[in-house]
Image (tube, rainbow, N blue to C red):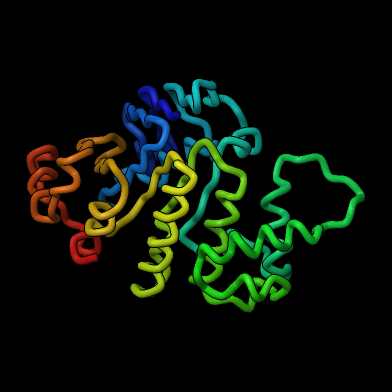
Length: 264
């Protein structure tokens, strides 16, 4: 479903602020893979997601989604393939619009607009059923302004909106990092439910090693713009934080220094 072939990205080339963000990165995801991504600050995790989404073009290499070369496609033309949730719960929804209106916008993404009524009765029933998955009581608050919801509620709604029209690839960029631990755990549980139900191919960045181990069928660790570890299947199921740190030290030749990731 995703092929990243030897991509490079350097910011501010030829200046004192030159930064090699992606350095010959290659990665392949099969349909239905749920891959957690971990690595220290500056490892290239978010740069990789932005390159996939087309937020900027890569200097070299290719990116293919479901066999289609999107390397030179602008961001808005890649949007039909992707669902994305960012770290900030406030960025994925329209605060002044109601819950049902936000869901309607997500459902109509990429469709021609007409002069028909905005939201039909049948749609409201559909949205109520979808919102029940979140287990947050939002199905009884369809007309409530999204700006009145908590950060966790907004992030859960954003996740639902990002997957309402099944994307070929779901990108989660530390989407629970700004939430308190209890809310983050709830959003992660919802994430797992939606991914499994829809059989979504997913890349999820996290700074929490425990979450990276507990979720998904594959775990990759990045360093200096490339993948240095790729753990999957039974090996991942049996993995511990201590073993992961040991594998990192073997692969990188140094210690993993991100306390936030180790401590969760």
